[in-house]
Length: 219
Image (cartoon, rainbow, N blue to C red):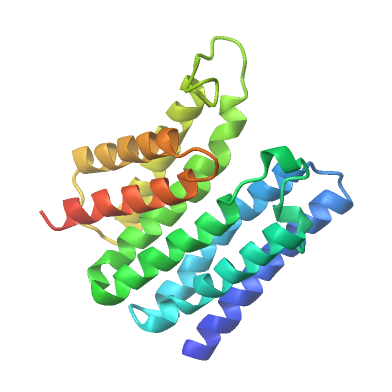
């Protein structure tokens, strides 16, 4: 199971990167679009790790590898499909994405019941933060704040998508989360996205959201 877990996890991530590259090269997708493909789909690597690794230290290895890979890519532009073409807008978001996975994975090793919360944090990051900019880009009637870096529609999208994620994870994993807990976890997700600037939301959102989910599961 462990070998299978490594094989599926790494194959999945590199396959997602391949899809993003095809979208960028053949279909002329923008750098932001290819980044979002990776941002959303890579989170699904949690599934084979959850099934095959459980709460063992193997859970930490793949994201730790991608901390190194993503850092090298950021500095050397190895994987252009996940880097911003405008150097002025470049951030450590891809590195923080993998770092957040390492932190949640390590905590899951010491606290096995944190493992579902790791999944909640990852999928809220993937769908909430990943897809919210599509809604946030709407101009008409959309109020901006934080110096124009965040919008009301974008934050609302993070909340709604995160709520859907939490409800789905609660049902699939049979978690004892009450309805009000699901709402508050989604609120936390939206708030953590707001305060995380320059790619830091890839840290604040999954870590904050998973921590709040863990607190509710252990009340």
